Amino acid sequence: MLRLENLSCGYGSVRAVQDVSLHLAAHQSLALLGPNGAGKTSTIMAIMGHTTIHGGRILLDGRDITHVPPVKRVELGIAVVPEGRRLFSDMSVEENLTVGGYRHAIANDRKNRARVYDLFPRLAERRKQISGSLSGGEQQMLAMGRALMAEPRLLLIDELSLGLMPKMVDLCFDALAALKVDGVTILLVEQNTARALNFTDRVCVMTSGVLAFSGVSADAINNEQLFDVFVNSP
Figure 1 (cartoon, one colour):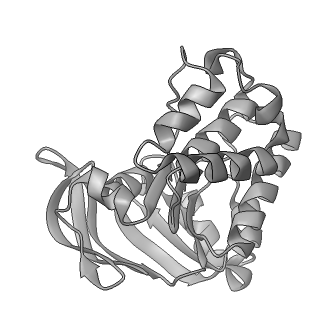
Figure 2 (cartoon, one colour):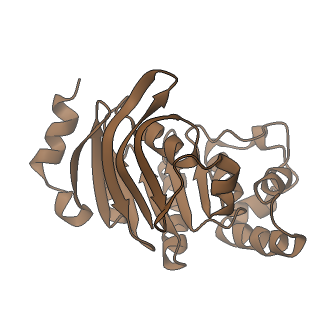
Figure 3 (tube, helix red, strand yellow):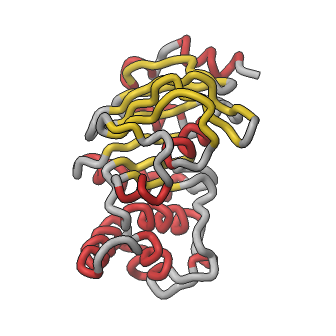
């Protein structure tokens, strides 16, 4: 479904990612790991169309989308749960979900909203509550729900568990597992390496803007090469 070919990107003239190639098949999940500053978020933002492309290509279902506008990428089935959630904090839970599904018909909105509330019953209980007053875990649920309102085939998630209590992490990963069963393709950036490897099918590890490791997640759990990337990276 997704293929990056020798992708180099950044912000203006500053390059954050250099010559990265990876692929993700439909209905699979990929963990994108690495130390802080490795280029993980920049890679996700490039897939969504929010970085400067210096070289290489981004393909979705074999189609070159390297220079396709971000809004068109959403229409093609890509959605992102950004690091830090980036909710509309002065809007309610329902209003945030409405924003996420604004490109779909009312009938789709109702269906997708029901799907979100089924995954996250706590959001249904707080549907009228201002999102800025939610707990961190509830805000993460809402960020995921907002992305799901776009009916993504490919879901990009940046730092799912960051700052969350263990119980909330469990709830969010349970929701991801349900989405995976439903056939959603998932690219996950996650600081909890063990949790990410146990959830995903494949793993890519970045350091200093380049790809340092790629393999099957189950085989990488006790891989010394992967461990060395984190220990020896600047």
